[in-house]
Image: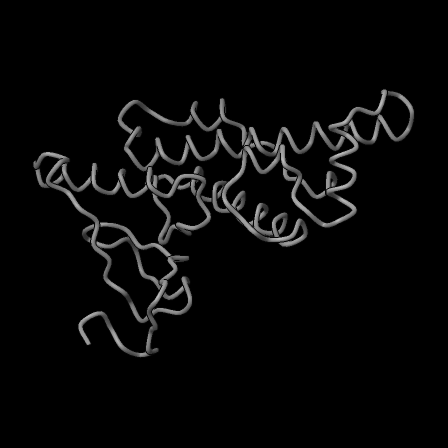
Amino acid sequence: YKDELPPDLDMPEIRGRLREEDYTPYVITSLQESDRMNLLVGTIRNSLTELELGISGALNVTEGMEALSTSLQLNRVNSTWQQLAYPSLKPLSGWFADLLSRMQQLVEWTNERSGLLKSIWISGLFNPMAFLTAVMQVTARNKQLPLDYMTNRATFLNIVDIADIIGLPANGVHIHGLFLEGASWEEGKGDDE
């Protein structure tokens, strides 16, 4: 897994590109998400490096290294990684593929000049609630209303492929990866039917 880990997001470079007026709630959320991802990826990288050194005899093998080795053998996410990560019940192989997709979204998001992608993979965030709060903050500022008056409302679009989304919405944001529990969705029907 260590060789497949992406490099850390270059936070000094990312922040260096931003002007003071660029620090919108969306940009701040992307920076917070990126900091958390760097912490997780750095922890994974360090623990795998230590495990390699322990196996080669360059370091004494600790209980943490043994636990990591067992997790890897059983295709489970190590508990240390879980503490820094997002909720997931996936086995390690699926979890790691998910991690790479989450990192890719952050790379794209932090490189987006507008501070917002065409659609945010909401379930790919460490803290989706912070993003939803950012949406309310932007709306409150645009409408010159107190944040306490804001709520989130979803309108479902009949779009299957994100590439079909043209531009940003006039109000709010596009998200994908939202899950419904205890409900069903009939393809081809909108929220008004």
